[in-house]
Image 1 (tube, rainbow, N blue to C red):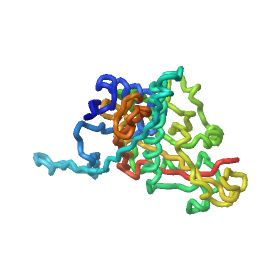
Image 2 (image 1 turned 135 degrees about the horizontal axis):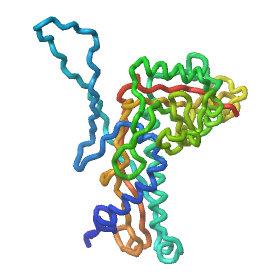
Image 3 (image 1 turned 180 degrees about the vertical axis):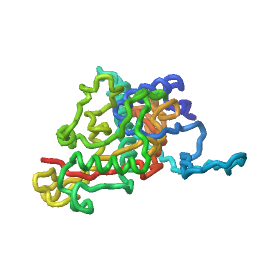
Image 4 (image 1 turned 45 degrees about the horizontal axis):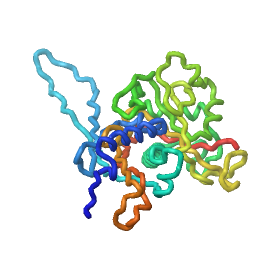
Length: 331
């Protein structure tokens, strides 16, 4: 017998749309990076290659005007950055016994947990792209293998100075933390993405202001711990260090106890990078196969599954508008 399900498995397109929205809702609080990237949503029947376009700045050399003479006008120039989409996904098997006899709403709980997994998986992908940028400052020494000291205010200022020299723009609005599209205005700032292990050191920097003291400073980001001068810091366990990659550990955290773990702190300016957002009706496809339905390989209908799949990608648009500071953290 031919399979009579839908593109979502054994659920209707209407139910699939509802499940997709619920999955995205569960994922949004864990999507730290997405709101700071230029977004281009996935369109229906799109190709595997996404094109992100950046218009280049005009030459600002002074041009004196002569009376009655029309000067030569400038032409807009652009830089196209392409990236290939990659499909990600996973599923959980559910037996007919669990479905029929367990007191909890197993399918609903499974979809919620998968939403969290999807967010963390895509965050890991995006972080991997961003931390490969070439603009870098080491806490001490000239290479990662030297690093065994922590973040200082002087190091932060060195990073923001480098960004400002490149005319990097601060964030004044970010993508909303909802399943739908939209932006929200925020106070001007650069963004520092760091691992939660770095939180104590950042709180110890001179001039640190915690989020609870912001007052009318604007919207607070998920994972935000506070600001130092013109940088707002957002922490997540996704932003993992390089284990044992630094110099002799001394009093610093180390995975094996010999060399210091090296933590990347990513400083982002507006339009430094882009991604396909995990938002909208085309962002994710929930897939549900109910147990108790006989199908190929399962003639007694003993197994079902609940899963998701999504196409995504991230890319650096301007390496000069982002900077990686590599530091160690006190044990």
